[in-house]
Image (spheres, chains in turn yellow, cyan):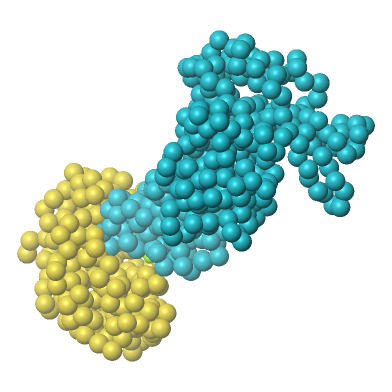
Length: 229
Length: 410
Ligand SMILES: Nc1ncnc2c1ncn2[C@@H]1O[C@H](COP(=O)(O)OP(=O)(O)O)[C@@H](O)[C@H]1O
Ligand SMILES: [Mg+2]
């Protein structure tokens, strides 16, 4: 299958004074369209760094990152922002909703940064809120929602511009087992509808649910294997 | 926008600088405008080419070593002749006497200024006849008992029918009304008689006034009688060209200084009033301009400070928005707009205060002020610019944050 995102010998090096931290070390991997991946590894193994690169909020120190066949080296800051808004959806461990906006407004935030925002944006946001089970919470602020509900808002928000790639960094890390399972089911649903999903987690039980498992160790690929899903 | 309301008190305090700056700008313009307008009006009323000599009662100290009941002071006919004959630029010289007389029509009694003067008074002062005619040379020669009424006097005595041809009583004498003048706006320097507006005047021929009322004024003050002898109350000298006014004024001052031992006269030069008004305006502009400039600078820095704090507080939000597709320019815009809202908020209140200050100045300092329509527009523009200028750096900082770092921010 044609890759949505492909890393070629990518390294990301943090320099702190005289010491260098190689958070990612010569990584090469391709993620195919419609795949469901989990990225696993112990804390500090480079999972978040990988996800930030894939999400175009960070750039590799060396190597090439290709999105939809385009080399990100040739894209400037505005192009990358545009790409993030249109083709990539982010889901974070701490939900990262904007506290002063209500559920519907939070879901609609990515619409404002599009070159030509769709006219039916609000309808789309409503139906997404219904999809993730928040039909009766549209006008609540994040502070009035449980962790699981907040993460549902974040998932709806990540889907508002209909991106092809969803990146979730420890999306279930702050949730109890039952809620984690529900969130995971949501991801599986959207994957079945064609979204490519990368799920960063350090929990074996969650990671095994994906089709493919990428294991990182000290910034290097430890193993690429099949999941249970 | 939400965060602005979140910190209402903080926002309010920061906008005070802009508020003061903007209100100073408006007050400055209003006071300056009022001063020059007033000066121009005085010029219009007193005549830009006139030099006016007035009798002034000398201060009490100077009087006390003279006889306590009879007091000679002020301009004399000799002064009048000297002014008329020694200046090359003076074209006309008009003498004026102010008589302290009651004026009646039937049972109506008022106390207007009764001016005894010549027929040239009209032209030299630029007053206009509303009905009938002004005093003529023939009235002067015949020592006729005729008078011209100020508009208010005519209105109060003859509210319905025309005053022309009616008889009124000035002191014990009857006078025939031959004309009515158009009203004029009061001038700052003129002190109206108690209970009477300045436009309340009755004019009679100089010769007639002299015949019936002589040169003596009897004033009754706190029970004791005070007799004042004043030959002329005012001498108006018209100069041929505006550029000769300062020369004539200087010559007039010198002449009177030579002829008078005490300061029992003043020289009023309308052109100098204008210069003085311009000077007042200039000083006000400098003082208020400095206040405005400092306030706006302090206000701008305050706003910048608050916005820098806001940017730090909302670092995470910036990271989220960037991850969701916001370009640098979007973040930049968001914070610039917030800064402008902040400073325009202060500016709008400042415009309100700035419009109120001139009214207060008018009330307390007795100065005319005029708020023109461009002042609030200018002030609004200034507050928008302050927001843009001082919002630029915080907004730039926000826009150039590293998204990854911003997202990790607690
Ligand atoms: N901004 C940074 N500056 C310096 N070192 C960093 C920075 N971000 C991450 N690292 C280092 O890079 C390595 C990988 O980090 P990360 O990708 O966050 O790991 P994970 O998400 O797997 O826990 C860690 O050793 C971490 O300390
Ligand atoms: Mg991590």
